[in-house]
Length: 360
Image (cartoon, rainbow, N blue to C red; front, side, top):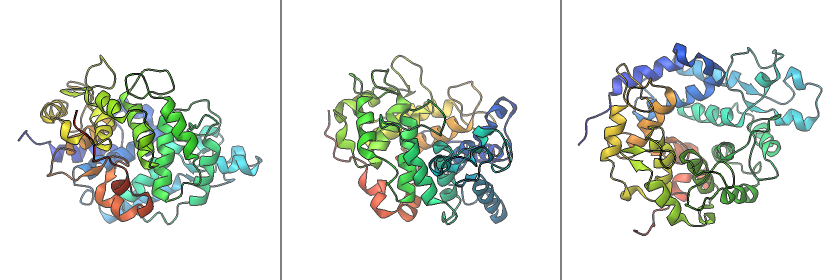
């Protein structure tokens, strides 16, 4: 058995990230919702989430998350807009950098963001909240305004940005809330299928290079929609993912290993039923080599740690360690939590993973 993670150091690292950011990361303060989500995921993957906080601390985080919720017609910058665009702003913001969302004048700070909404809902579940104060109708309504004619999703109103990351976030939000009426699943599926490359991988957009991060977003989205069979060649897609393992997983052909792909590619392998085809020994050695002296995990040995690489590296590590909680690969939440809190008809644990894959 390989050496164990430095669990106590990582717990301190994630708790610190929830309270303040190190100087190299202060530029990410507007994305604090995502940083909080990843820190909570890291604690959950280590089995330390419940013991990490007092009840007052847990409740304080829940209240902060709800303070970032944008309801219809609460934004100053959109107060005179139509009801449709007002609904389109709904969801959760990335953080409180610009103050309360109903008092600022900077438009971008007053918009819900589908990625932040996914992070907020996941964080609330991890903290034991019942989502009772979530404006479900507004969030599902916002998804309708963020889906593009191509089938892809924009992260928020007023941007030209769109790719499978936001399709995944929309699918995860729909699954968590148990309401798929905000997603045209047929259009989203067609867009994802169009991102399939000649090599079996998946990309940011049609005819672009296959990439491990977008592989996950596409495969997980299809699994959440019950559409894995839409992949043109699942065998070839799994093969592309398996071939990215070289000690650690690489994100693209010819690149060096990066610990975050332990999840992006590793979870895709799990969803596609390839768990038994992976020799985890090299992956475990690589992950441990990326541990930082005082906690956290870096993208590669010698780099500074950050919450994204730390959390995703630990989750990928945990796929092969029975002593750590099993994380559900499609929702990045503990399996027990998904079974208990995600509506049964949308339960990815029981409907998404392909366990019948033939050997090569």
